[in-house]
Image 1: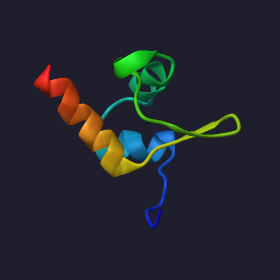
Image 2: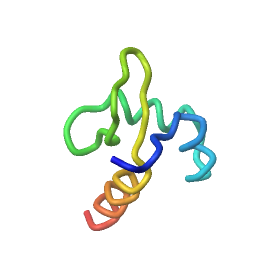
Image 3: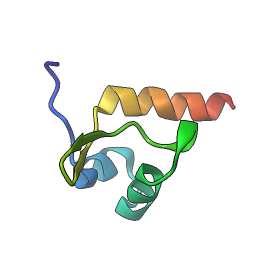
Image 4: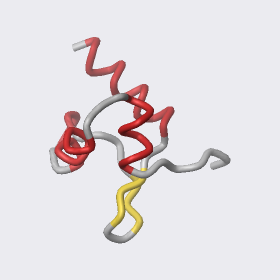
Length: 60
C-alpha cells in the first residue's frame, strides 16, 4: 500500500462531514459500516476505499 492512511479528522475534512458522522459509521455492522483499518484503538481510512464505499451507498 503506497497511500497514506487518513485519521478521522483528516477524512472528515476531505469529505466535508462531521467527525461524529464518521465515528458513528465505524460502529455500524455490515454494508453500512465505513471501511476502516484498525490500528489498535485507532481508526484509519484509505481514502479511495471510502470513496468507493460512498458510491456504493448512492447506488442503493
